[in-house]
Image: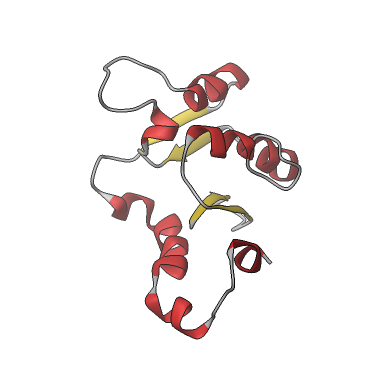
Length: 123
């Protein structure tokens, strides 16, 4: 299971969606109304002036081909959002989101709660 997070660091407002995979197609199609994940978050939280991103390939465009701007980067630039990428292999720069990831990744959560399937996890 994968959790996508949009976190407003000033207000601590969180928009989160869950998925069974972490592909660009899933990120684009995931959300309560099967819309684009970031557009769903921006509808409820507003379009940010700047956005700090994880360096995951689905957001930055990948690492194998240099000078390629991924779909998400192009979308942000199109609507005027300034992008800030955290340094590679330095998750401490993204500690607020890493703390959220720790809630899902921690074995204590999965030992306390038992789910029959992905639908139960989402509920």
